[in-house]
Image 1 (tube, helix red, strand yellow):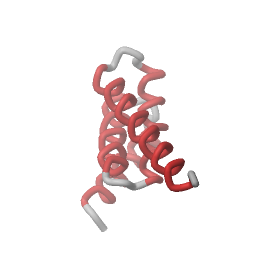
Image 2 (cartoon, rainbow, N blue to C red; image 1 turned 30 degrees about the horizontal axis):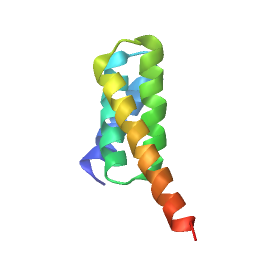
Image 3 (cartoon, rainbow, N blue to C red; image 1 turned 45 degrees about the vertical axis):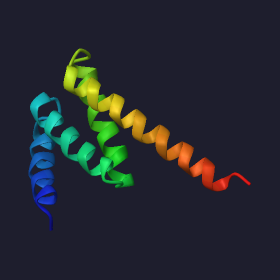
Image 4 (cartoon, helix red, strand yellow; image 1 turned 180 degrees about the vertical axis):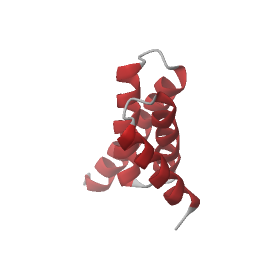
Length: 88
């Protein structure tokens, strides 16, 4: 197991106890974002979900807004590259 796996497990367990803890949501968002940037598709969805939860609690969180923008860029690039592979 990678260090991300054990850290995620511990953070997600803490989030189950306190789902509105913004520090924990930020930690999860950072880890999943980093994994999504490395090409992990499942992490892209998890990062999106956690950053949206954080932004619902604090819509002005600059780091969360930055991660959300980065995730949108990753999604757009993946969508355009998958279209390019399908195009004749």
